Image (cartoon, rainbow over the protein chains, first blue to last red):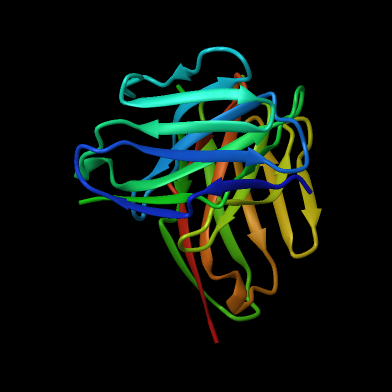
Length: 115
Length: 110
């Protein structure tokens, strides 16, 4: 099956710093990648959709200047949380989809803790 | 309406029993309905999925029942095992995006 990896798996940072999370499709080319956020005991909320070589589309209420998404290649998308604050602490999960396919393949998630 | 409603919030089932989780949706443009299993600290993993032109799909112990007219679908886990204890999410796809239900925490007791 299609495998998606994320790095790092967990990160702790100080308030005000920026953190970059990588999402890679290991054995397929992902035309579209998605970034989700999940608070404890809650559901996954879509933050943004990114297509290779174009700007990401952000969901309503998600600050594009705070959550920078770059989809530089068909196998790599990055999410940068800029000037992180404690309220940004969450579980960030990416997924990747194939062109014309319905299924999304999810990464293992990144636990971000902002002190 | 993009909302997907899921129930129950939590479920306790005895080992060997049947676990049933229900979801309902409003948007008739949804074209794909997957179920995901998530363990603590892990990403969700696809269990089984169905298209709206099919009323039932079975894969091993997992079955999706789909009622298009009622805009409802459900997951049945037969012969539930302790290893099935996890959080389950239904989802619906529209405009290439997935909308997730609120999740059901399933606990299988001996």
